Image 1 (cartoon, rainbow, N blue to C red):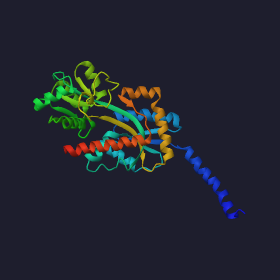
Image 2 (cartoon, rainbow, N blue to C red):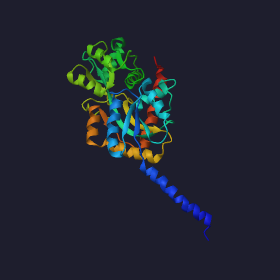
Image 3 (cartoon, rainbow, N blue to C red):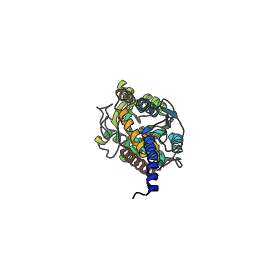
Image 4 (cartoon, rainbow, N blue to C red):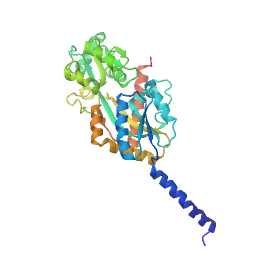
Amino acid sequence: MLDRRKFLYSVAGLPLVAADVSFAQAYPQRPITLIVPYAPGGATDIIGRVIANEISNTLGQRMIVDNRAGAGGSVGAQAATRAPADGYTLMLGALTSHSINMTFQAKPGFDLKKDFAPVGLAGNVGLALVVHPSVPAKTVPELIALIKANPQDYSCATSGQGSPQHLSAELFNLKAGLKMPLVPYRGSGPAMTDMVGGQVKIMFDTIPAVLQYVKAGSLKAIATTGREPSSFMPEVPTVIAQGLDGFEVSSWFGMLAPADTPKPIIYQLNAEMNKALQNAKVKEALALQGVDRKPSTPAEAAKLIETEIAKWGDLIKATGIKPE
C-alpha cells in the first residue's frame, strides 16, 4: 500500500519540479549584459555589438554591450568574474590577449580557465608580416638572412606591449634565432605611420590594419601568420609554409560566462551564437573587420583557451619579457 505521506510529498513536489523546468526553459527573462573589456570602436567592440544585435533578434531579450576598458582587457574580465553565474552577464573576450595576460601581467585579477565557462568562439583575425618597400626581401627566408647579416638595420615596430602583434615579433625572433631590435609604440596607428615613412622596416599587425597599405604599395606583405592562408590575403603564403615550423598567431575572439553558469544556459547561448554567425548580415559585418568566423562548441572553445595560455606562457618565460 502506498504510504500516504510519500504520496502527498510526491504530488506536492510535482508543481515545484514543473516550475523549475519552466524557469530553465524561460531563460532569458530580462536583458543580458555583454561586457566588452575594451573601448568602443575597436575590433572586440565591433564583433561584440554585431553578435549581440543578432542574438537580441532571436533570443527574445536584448543583449546590451557594456564597455569596461582598462589594463589590456583585465578590468572588464575581472568585472565579468564578479557577476552572478546566472547567464545575465557575459563577456565577449579577446581570447588571445587574455591568454597572454595570464602570464604577462603579474596580477591579471582573473584566471581565464577557472573563472569562466566558455560559451563559444566567434572567430579570429589573422596577422601579416609586412615590410617597407625598400626592404629587398620577398620571402621569410630572405628576410631572416637580411636581418642576420645586419640586425641593427632592420628594426621591427610593435604596437602595444604584450599585444599579439608584439608577441608575434618575439616569437619570430625566437623561432628564427634572431636578435631583431623591437621598437615599441602606443598602438598600431603611430607604428604604421613610421612604417610607411620608413623609420622602421618590419612589423606584424592584423590583416585589416595593413591591407590598404599593401594594396596601395606603401607596404609589402611577406607572410601571413595563420596555419592556413588567409581568405583576406590568399595570395600571401604563411610563415609556416615558408619554413618556420610552429609559427602560428591569430587573434581569437569568443564569448565567456562566469564559472558555474548552468550548462543548459551555456548550451542555449552557444546555439544562439552559432546561429548568429551564419546570418548573412553578420557574415558581412565581420568580414569587414577581417574576422574568419569559427563557430564552435563550448568544449572546443575551452581547448583553444588552454592551448593559447600554454603557448604564450611558454614564450613569455623563454624570452623573459615583462610589462614596461
